[in-house]
Image 1 (cartoon, rainbow over the protein chains, first blue to last red):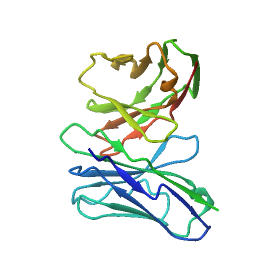
Image 2: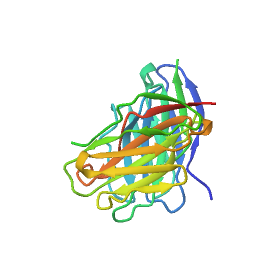
Image 3: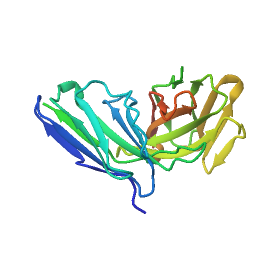
Length: 115
Length: 115
């Protein structure tokens, strides 16, 4: 079956430009997560969506970062006025939330390079 | 506060050796979930196992086994008879009720298996 997909796979942009990263979760998954992974480092939580509830934005590093999700489908992570420190792989994951379980399935990531 | 510590940054073994990846976690909750993920060179995280806090039974899946010990807050992962294809970064992760929907990842352990 189809897994989590992300686009683009690679994005090179100039400092100061805005970028949009897209995530298509697994069909039927109600929860969606965005993470950032800097080179050689672990995963840094950014934002979480669960159904129609208000998203948990506590991991967003600055107000230049925002994300939206339409219902239980596609999500877009937007980074405005990109900075070189935003260079990283941005990973999206989805899960089928049931009581007591939350196994996240990850997409291949978008590698963002800010020049 | 939730925390996951993977003290081993890198491990290098020769094929067919057994190797154990350590994971120590911190949580104040009695209900929590622990995960292991594998990130091969291709970059996509692969789910390996989920264990809930009420189930301390160790698990074996082929060459993989997991040792969950609440007394030492550890959830170690052993690969028996390692193979070159096991070379990857392995992440341990924790989700608990206090953290809500966040999953906290350790920094990862990079495993090199040499032929």
